[in-house]
Amino acid sequence: MATCDTCGNDYDKTFTVTRGDVSGTFDSFECAAQAMAPQCAHCGCRILGHGVEADGTMYCCAHCARQSGQAALTDRADRT
Image (cartoon, rainbow, N blue to C red):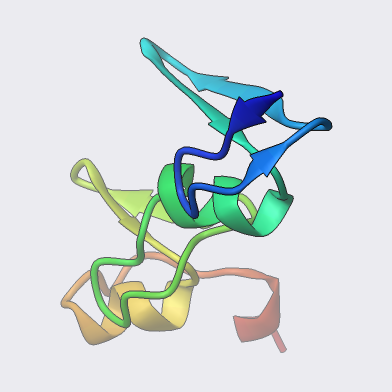
């Protein structure tokens, strides 16, 4: 059995997630997201979808990007 890097649970069904040069062992997608998913620079939530990026900074949505001064970013929810 392997131990989850996030919660420390010793579990027989762990899996490994790799992003770039960083890998981790987890017992659930929740633990993997907590450890590996980027955080929105404005609201701090974990970005589980595509998110948006401006000047190397990640945001969960165009609204948060605009709130941080990135006026040019839009997403489908902003279209009328």
